[in-house]
Length: 110
Image (cartoon, helix red, strand yellow):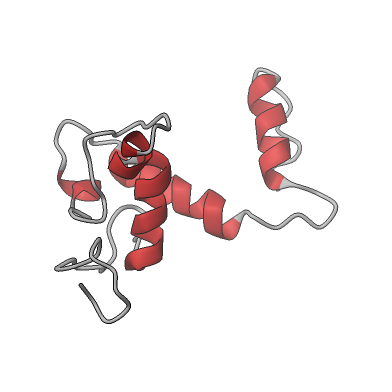
């Protein structure tokens, strides 16, 4: 247990991994919450239900069976942290429309 009473981060190294260098307790925790073991444990769909990113942050780069993880972690960080603004125009809404529209009109990409 750390000084904040958390046990899910004990013994972890939080230095950067992946294409955008996912770092820190919060970023690995969110990755685990949405895509990893915690999502599966709590009954949500999980792309990586057997990977606990909090206990094994190195999984982002070391899992041979999931070489895409370094890119998925980078895109996850980009979308959650850098593209969250919505000041009358939402990147996420436009990205969804682009994908659902067959990826034809890429005019929203600047």
